[in-house]
Image 1 (spheres, one colour):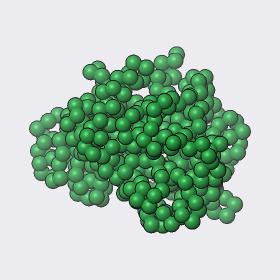
Image 2 (tube, one colour):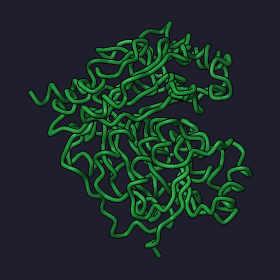
Image 3 (tube, helix red, strand yellow):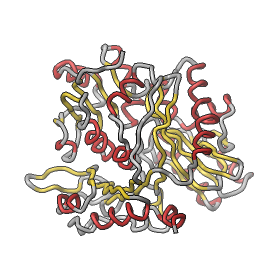
Length: 429
């Protein structure tokens, strides 16, 4: 039975994704009360931030009981992989997100590649290594470019697209040498696919999958797709390159076989399945899975979603998405990330940020990520700090509105890319 009465909600996380989710959840008539743990200064405008160690499952459960929480929404990947949803279920608390066994689709690149092999899901050819010498021998016997991936969670920094053998060898030696800690204890080396990247999101209930939007993001830190990979410097939605025919192909050849495979293995997947895709000459191929809303993709999906988010999430968690069809606004959404100096490396924290209300008065939404309050001042406290989001009739208009709003923000130390959406704008001309 789907909920028709208002719920007390707890949202787990503290980034821009969680600010976008809090903004959307708080609009629901089914949201009686919203708490965010630990949240950030932006989420505090939509609910109550709880100072809570989300890695302490007992503390999360105690807070749910103390606050009368009816439903938990887990935002980031780390708590999912660590089994927070399992712990909540054992305590009788409903939650949105996969259990730990299913969250391995994001938590282990090797796990996902083996699933693709077993269930004939199109993906790049690959090999797995735990020791440096055989990995280097494999590289030297092959050809570049090649992609080297840390098996585990590495906060968006565990993928190296190596153009040369030297770059590939350095990536292997760094990862297997402990450069990424436990995340790099195993590496996956795979062929470098050629094509355009796009992302597709599916809401899953263990058996069924419902398309929940598409997006394209910009991983490289600098204009023109230059510099190192990041967690994402901006995004737009929908992804024009993903036509209805391609969406249907991805759902049929990638998403549904994944759900069937996970269910066959006894680890059904419930939550958001975020497929990172390469659109090759041979058709769409899976690059990787995330098992939660993307960041910064969530910041463009939520403003476009016309449907109430709460019943979508509760229906997935209850295992019954039958008859669910999300409604979308006609506009395009585009978000630009403002980052702290040094990102994606060691960042400088503590610089003051002003002008957010002026940016929002210009017609944008400003989702906060790496921020904190220092008295009356709002200061940078992370790598990706703000996500400035605007809606428009097309990508060009959304882009113009986002940058016009961003330019009202008074944060001299911050930086951004100035070309978010360039591919789609080129298509529109």
